[in-house]
Picture 1: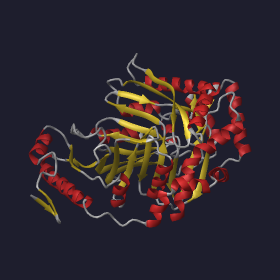
Picture 2: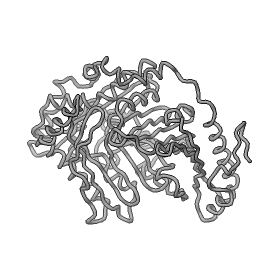
Picture 3: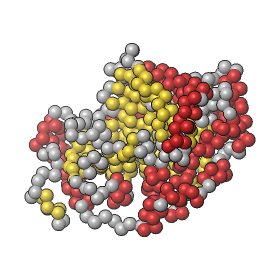
Picture 4: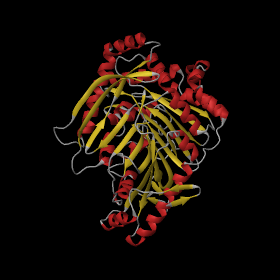
Length: 514
């Protein structure tokens, strides 16, 4: 019987005992997840993140179609290493900075490729890997786009590897502790097992202790967040914070239309940036945004010197068991006050020739991007122009997938699909050149991607939209819209305001506690 403090465990703490662990090492595995499941029906992902806040580096959740909770939530603890960039330099947290002539994602791929990971069949697809973000400006490493004279305040990429991952299973009301044990040398295997088992036992003991005291003011604020929205004129606040006056953005739209009419591009996606000073607590902001805007991708990434808090509706790509997928979103309407209003807005959106033409064009772009890495003849549109409703908006959404070629992997798929055509326009490169001329600031995280490259070889990334980026005491939100030949300039300005409203509202509500 194992005794930890006052907790007694008359059973093995890990599903992999020492003999099995050593056998896996002999078979060539050097990353082995020790794991144990606790039935914690009183804990939530947020309460677990709060409990381990000083060690937490990410929280990933999902709300299917913005309404139902996804089955799993993931919390990363105990950063083992971090990869980030500064100009042409790639920085490992455990090594000296060095200049890389290749993409930082290729450097990341090499690190993950050095891991020969044992995948227990009882664990979900993600139980560890490189979690982080890629900023929009990473594209300058993929295409011949100048960096210009504006200095970057964000790295091109920022990924971390968590030594421990907590997997919350909302179906079974359980939490699985996963300690990803890295065995540097076979001779270290016994010590590595003992160290990871002790960590597993300690975490289990800590999770069964009384939770930390709650902040009543914060709990009241989060609990009443949906009711507080009516007291804030978020659209007026957005207009005041935007880096464009309405007439300035209208001029950008008119200029974009001239390029479209001239045949330079088919579509381009300029954006507005909204900035304000903030010392908001990232977890409080996440909780408020989660309450206001449940989305398929919800995330809190804490890299220490920057945080990303978002609720994105749009997948950039998913690679799962050899299938690469993308889900372009193009076509937007606000949610109505009633079901009848929603249905009327759906009909209006489906009948809007501009929206449909724009959507089909971006689906074709998605098919082309998937086709760059898929086996010939396997690319298909599994779903076309389906309406999905979210808390504030409804969108036209399609699903494109294909079979990944045998000699390619998730990193190849990422480079083929990045950045999303729904955030640039088409053709991509020329649209991005125009965006550089229209926008006076670098995009940073906006229009990039948030997600993970899994130890299993799979990947899942959202497009970084409906997101608050926190760095150096500044909170930034950004939103854009696709411009085509018959776009209405003032409507496009207001659509940006609508898209920025949910994260800005969350920021306005959460910031008083800062």
